[in-house]
Length: 320
Image (cartoon, rainbow, N blue to C red; front, side, top):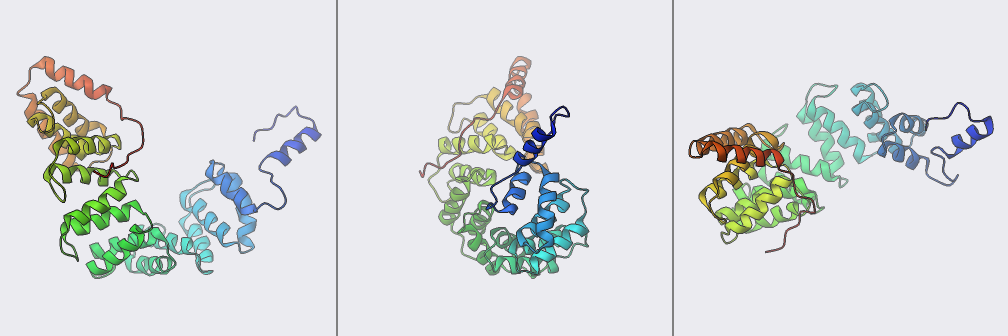
């Protein structure tokens, strides 16, 4: 809180008392956490440090995060690691996972996926969802460990059953592609829907793709369009490209070259969730379509793309 220099000493003392004060019975760590949550990082650091020095494992982890991310202090991975280790040495799963992440990403240490796996396992054994999900990825991709789809499935499932959207998406992918299990498109779709209900863009897109291609569900282009629209609202460029294709071919909607060009253009330039293949495919589709259109139509399509805004609201499956 910024203090008015004209305040009297008594008023200043009162403001000091009110600023981040709490009843004596309150948990001091919660004050530090609240300060962190609202972006008052220097205050969080000031409040957390004495608690961390006294051995409060939660405060030690918070100190690690502040140094890790450079919040309220100069970023210092070595100092972050020191605090994470103090928390991890007391069995803190969050500290263990954070150490794993530093090794996984090579931040402040040489990248070492074997060491990362060690720390993820410690955290995952305590039920840490993010650690379980990342272990699934390490085993699926063979990073720091021999590729093992059975192990990947085990860890993905543990995280997915705790409602981790990324793990639900990845578990769906395992069933979709038949990795470690017989391909089961209906089961893949079930997990995609669960992740989609939590707003996971790639899962929403995959549900749309399932309807478009009749994978695990009856083919339905109208449903595909709706799911693609939901994915685009979440920034998924691949879904925008697929919408363009549906409009260009008149699948689930009357043919509309202007709408198709608009969606291709959005996929090419405006939407963040895209890889280079998405963009190149969208650019190619847009440019090939433009040759079939007159200049006025292209101008209208470009204007529509500039004016497009995502719809607001929750992304939920209707269970259809």
